[in-house]
Image 1 (cartoon, one colour):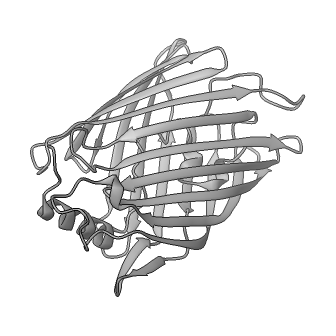
Image 2 (image 1 turned 120 degrees about the horizontal axis):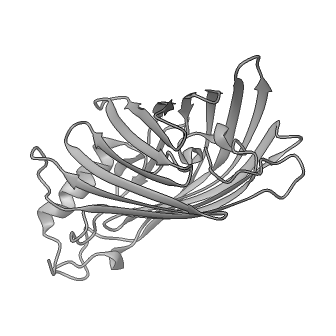
Length: 298
């Protein structure tokens, strides 16, 4: 597609204004700090990772998300600190989030309870050069920049078998005014995530998980994942989002590195028949005496 039709541009704007959703991720099982600040330092190591997501590949101006994040466990693994940068772009609209995270863990008899918080700001920009239009310059596409502060909180209960987390990464609804039109940048999005590990045998684990997303004015979104873990080094699984998107995910751990890939395909009920790709690379190190010596992750 050489040019973006005007109808597609209006559809993109409608998506941004009405959906009010955070960026989508499919590899939050690798690094859940993207959806909950409480996971800072939760693997009791130094972690650094980068991921790229291209949604609706083949559509000019389709959503793309690039994120970098790092966190570290301190104070005998009772405290976690971290930082993240997330750039989410849809057409000529780009949101770049900068944030810092903090978590604190309390050991219980058979589990660990943690609470966390994050603070930072989001830079909202529109870039007319990011899209191709028939009439250039087009008055409907103008450059605009505004920055908004935000903060978030999260809770986590975890042991060797299960994990349950609840979070609101951005507690403050962010709105900007561009050309007399109010645009909702972010709304309060609630995340409820849970997973459980079943031991098939000494080498194979089965890990089902579910992520629920909820925000005012939109239906609840549900991800259901079914993953098999082999020798704590390789993971392969299937997932669905609202039974209208289906995906395959694979990952491997080589030394202290973890490489993950996700391929998504829309179901029959989708109006866009384009694939989505997501790739991630992370590094995990034990740099303190109190750190966990295993690099298997969460």
